[in-house]
Amino acid sequence: MTPPRGAPLEAIATSLRRERERIGLSLSELAKRAGIAKSTLSQLEGASGNPSVETLWALSLALDVPFSRLVEPARPRVQIIRAGEGPAVFSERADYVATLLASCPPNARRDIYLITAEPGSARESEPHMPGVIEHVVLSSGRARIGLTDDPIEVAPGDYVAYPGDVEHVFEALEPGTAAVMVSEHW
Image: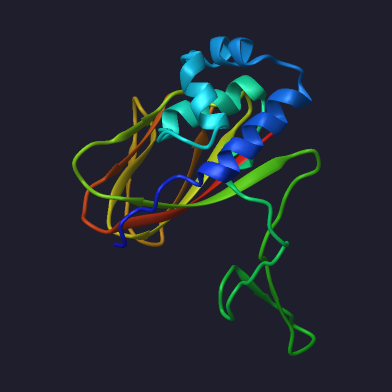
């Protein structure tokens, strides 16, 4: 597993300022709503500090935006799915295969994440925005994923979906555990 890179501070700073100003909040008010220190927020908007995932989730909830909007820099819309990926449906009448690459219901928002985790401590998540559903496909290792009260043990290739607006957990059980997670926001 490759070591994690630092948080994208410039993207976070730009996004926080943009989203805070979009809804007309002061630094003090946003910090209060997110339950963080005003100095922490000021540092983040100044592209310094080392934000935790918990701090950024709290800010995304306070701003009512998906987590990804705070950490992802603007970039051209390019997507690639390699041959043979996705669920394939074959035609009876022609040499034709339909492979589902992405589907999004009307009025929904979604984010796609690559999760890498190591055994040792579980990632326990507080509830996200109401209506969030998380979809996870484990690609390597083993993990316990789902509701904090009743996580499900999964192996490579397994899929699990659970409400993200209640407490939930991701716990790696083997070194090199990795998964793809789609967070769907209604």
